[in-house]
Length: 84
Image (cartoon, rainbow, N blue to C red; front, side, top):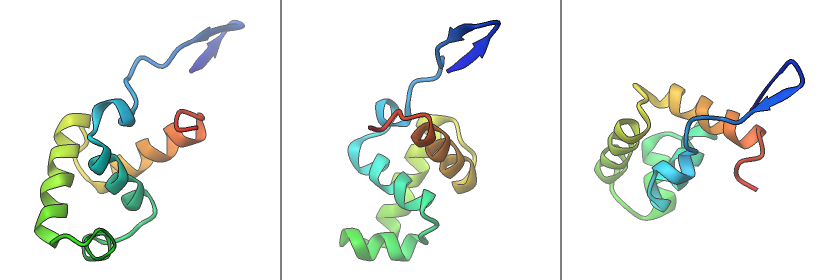
């Protein structure tokens, strides 16, 4: 949230956790950690293609154009304490 003249203005955007499926949210966390698709696929035991599809869906749901935008939003929301 933002504080203006002593008044707290809540975040207007829904959190990534609200917008993404649990798997997409998990993958977004790995993207925030700077893991490549092949590394994420190995951890999750799925194909690289499956990761690409999940990321494309996540980008569409969130309105991000790329991995960097998704990672920055994840990091910002985490720093705001939205994922505690």
